[in-house]
Length: 121
Length: 496
Image 1 (tube, chains in turn blue, yellow):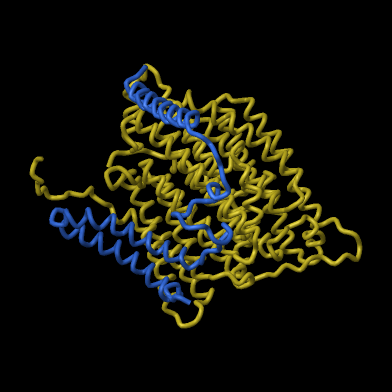
Image 2 (tube, one colour):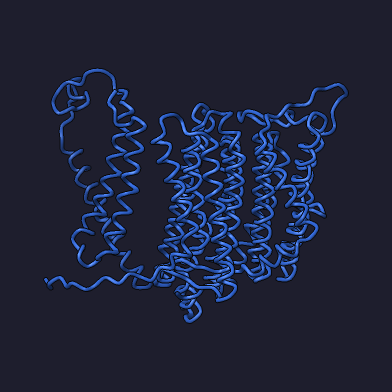
């Protein structure tokens, strides 16, 4: 067996051990604990408050649009932070590169703004 | 903790000239979006189509300049060998730009008719074309994957853009889910290739595989299998073709044309670059698998096409069987086979785009039953003749480009002594011809007094059909120039 596969074997053994341990604990708990269900105990747990209404609630599509825009700029930040820590090293090349990157993303925001996505109707 | 050293950053040298075709397309996409956001009223279809055509034309001129460079100085590569500039990449750049211009033209009347947003459509189309060019030129598996995703994401959205039709949304979701699934296969294949050879760069992989004899090459075999599965999905080769008929049927016709031609060509470009160029020393391992895929694809594509009653589904299965012919050429793992594959892809692209131009003009996209075409030969004889030529070319009738293409593929198979596969391709060509003749029959054989259909025609569609038919016949009569172009376009991997 090659070295690569041997290291995967460790992962496999670890996985089996994890499943066996969690399974053993849950099984022991199941055997030992008393079971006296009541109606109150069986309703869905919502932070201690009694649940109200059904579970098929509609959510606003505009939250989705905001989420997409958020992801856009979240990812932008992921790229900008490491770049900013090494700015001197990258020099003018890095500056121009990041300017192009931010420009394209800003164009996206501008497009979204002009299309009225940012308006909360 | 060692102190952080301030070492000057030296990026890899970039040959901007070689990247210019994609940069022009991306710039045009951004410009179209910007103008559509700034304009007080809806940006017109004329503006977006003209912008796309201008971008395609400028890129085309740059590609021709690059071609003369390659002729003079030989192939090169740029950005630390990640991006190849050789006959192969320029061949596909030219093909993709022709496809882009054609799709832009044939979507022109369609977008207005179906009230779809032209700027968004064209921006996505341009991005998708840029992705296809990156995919065909990439010398690095990761760059290739980026190109593939840029190509596919654009297509997912373009399919769904017809938002009033639930079929379009359904096929977009189908394509998206299965596309993401196949991308995962491809990525896993890339990861295993990296594990087996220590690099994702095709130039390095090639020189590593040439130099090293594996004691046990299971890892490399698994990598090749996964790469092949991922790419077979993209080119719709059986048994990974199940998405094709449904998605082709549901998508807007211009997008179907784009998927059937350029997405497929880009997939084959990646396939050829990875398997023919990088895994050349292991062709004993992969060629039989590609051959088996080719046989399955040919049989399933041509037999299933006969059973369909919807034109778009027929053309979908016919595109599956065309993928089979290209796979036959790839299977031979020789320079002759590769140039046969390139020739086939080039001629096929024009045929399929012309066909979908006519399908798109034949009315709304909900269903395209064969009965919609009955009597077209009487009501619109010119269109019917054009469609007939394109269908007969796909069947491989002599004096059309399809015949030369099929002949070269089968000749390459015979040359590599795969007589069985050559036989299967000839038999399935006959089976396939039946399906094309069925459509032709429907157009011409009608009862007396029956009124033929009235397609919704736009002059841009005529340009596309005329160009496609003209190209098909000219290449069928004097194929030499394209054969030479394809011969010079065999992929080469050079360190840059």
